[in-house]
Image (cartoon, rainbow, N blue to C red; front, side):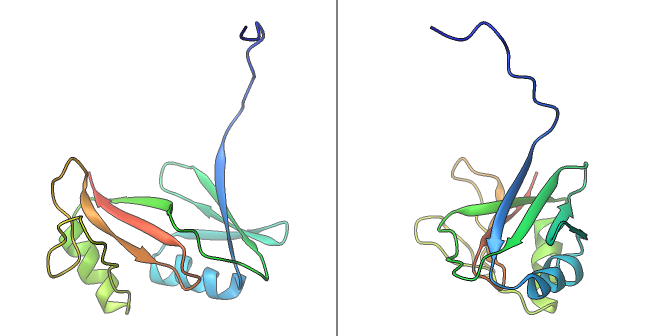
Length: 128
């Protein structure tokens, strides 16, 4: 039987680990151009639209084997060019029909691709 009282959630946010907060600050702030701030010994990304994501330091960090962050861009071609200029390569996954630039198109998924942060965490870059 479901509880009769609804849980009152005021806001939500995500989070993931990295082994070095300064490297993460540089990547997320300077390379990706996201709003990064310090909060209680962690980093906070404030994504367009106001959603927060915390990044915390974990010495024995192991990269996630799944996407930890999804970023929507207006033009995937331009985004891939901008990432390449910053030395960020697109990841390749078998079965996703990615083109020579690493962009996946169709197959019931948004047009886009994946990159890894310096800690190996996977980030999706997709065009809506």
